[in-house]
Amino acid sequence: MERIKVAFIGAGSAVWSSRIVIDLLINKDLQNRVDIWLMDISDWRLDLIYGFAKRYVDELKVNAKIFKTKDRVEAIKDADFVINSAMAGGHSYYERMREISEKYGYYRGINSVEWNYVSDYHTIWGYYQFKLMLDIAKDVEAYAPNAWLINVANPVFELTTLVTRELRKVKFIGLCHGHLGFVKAVEVLGMRLAKEKLGRDITALCAMHDPE
Image 1 (cartoon, one colour):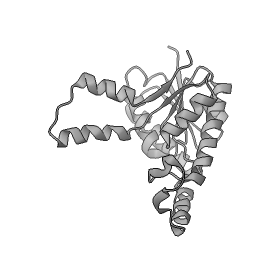
Image 2 (cartoon, helix red, strand yellow):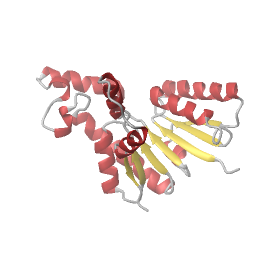
Image 3 (cartoon, helix red, strand yellow):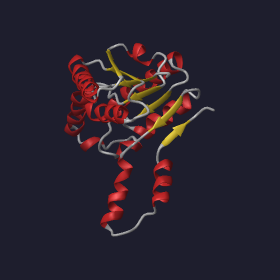
């Protein structure tokens, strides 16, 4: 049976990578033929998620294979799926940008850039995040041209727009879990939402680009 290669870029984002690794390993169609490549620039973060994934494979007694690397190209080369959750500079750099901004009156990131009216994003941090995303997409285009690149890193909409406009040959999906909050709001209001409509809404809220 042909094996499937799934590469995680920024695998040290353990909240994301650990949950997706679990999903892959409990899937009966994947658990015995998936090769999971974990890539991060942080040794201790990479070792943490690698140890978790290896232990999970051992406990499930499945034929999945786990690899770790700090080389992004090695992880991406010939992959079937590339999942990006990397954050340029990490959270310490992000919080430093917030600290400096707030010192000069830009509270929680509100400034002159339109998408910065969300409290989680910063202009300076955004530049490096955009550059990183574009570099990852270029690696996918060069070393895994048939792969789907799935981005879960913020800002999802802006990164999706950037890649799909600049690199039209890359198959790209931008996924944001935040929109699912509307389901809870519906429940609190005592409203009913048809399952088929829910499925359509979720699909519409996931940005996808397939050049074919």
